Amino acid sequence: MRKLLLYFFLLILFFGGLLFGHAAIGEKGRIFIAMGEWRIQMTVVSAVISLLIGSIVVVILWWATKRIFRMIAGSRDWFGVLSIRKQNKAFFNAINACAIGDYENAQKYISKTFPGEFDGANYMLAADIDRRVNNGNNIENLLGIAETFPESEASAKTQHAAWLIQQHQFRQAELVLESIGAKAQQQAVVVRLWLATLAALGKWALVKEKLRTHKKVLGDDYVQWAQQVVQGEFAEIASKQGANALKDKWASLPRAAKRDIANQIVYVQLLIDQGLSQDAEPILVELAKKTRNPSFHGLFKQLKHPSPHQAMRLIESWIKVDMDNAQLYSVLAHLAYNSGDIELAEKAVRKALELASNPEDGRLLARLLEKQNAFEKANNVYKGLLAS
Image (cartoon, rainbow, N blue to C red; front, side, top):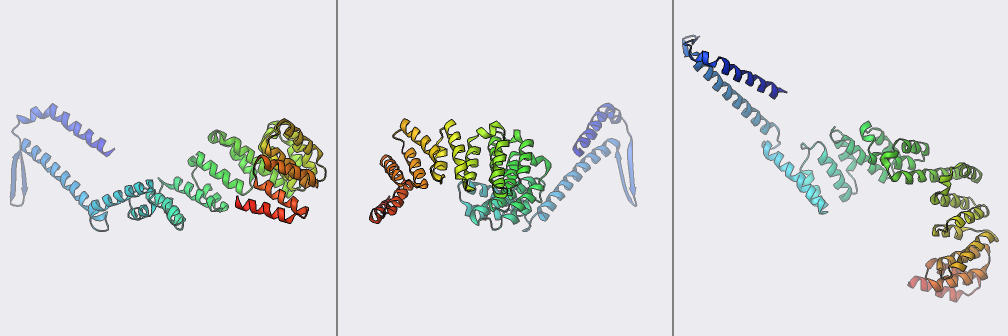
């Protein structure tokens, strides 16, 4: 703004000279200056030229004075320009060292930039280097300094929150996230940090609210987080209210949520964890009939109650269609073992091992041999597992 006013003033002088300069040239006017015994006499034209030259000299002297003052005042070693150049060079050297993974030298370089005029960027880089070299021993102090700069405040707080989440300090991370400005709160990286923090704290209602307000920002991650909310709510209900409340929650879900295989797996797993293997069996069988997905195999292996006929019939029907599938024989073997049918379990597990080597099936065969008091054979199976 000041430069604009100066240019405007000079423009007025220029046009004034064009309009009235010719009249002044022909005038014989004189200027007399008397200061004590000192007398100065000059024409109007020479006076104007003298004032112009004097103004230029004053401007040059003023610029030189400010420059010298900045050079002296801006440096700890009385060489301001040299110090600033050294800091700038150290900052870029630190960046280059980070690019090639030389973090120890990067730390040496970045320490030469303090305090420096980098708007907090040097402290943020130093924090990242400290995380890699010193396991973050000084990271919170460095980020705390970076947060004092308006230009880097939001970025530093975001990095600080991410660090606290990595350290499982979720309540502290929540406080830091709350202090971030409204504009930065809309950024996808901040929203994801919020979701991770709230999920870790079990605040599923707040997670739902964040998902509703930031669906567009999250993009493809929205579906994944929506599934995690359902799973988190399931786990919370199962641990606090029990299996009946869990069943009621599943019944109240919309059809789309029930069709999601991740939700199905979590639901059945929680029923099994609640000791409701018999209740879980028909649900698992019904779900597996609709979608023959290998993800269900682990759930079938965990069923543990007498006579799981529905599950065994389903697995046997799959085996008839795919007789060389080692995984199916493995599932059948574990189902039979858990239900007490040792003979069927041994036949199935031997067939599974014949088709494909699997440590889990090897351990099951060893347990079956121990039940038959064939300890030497069981020991040989264990040795074979160790050797492989």
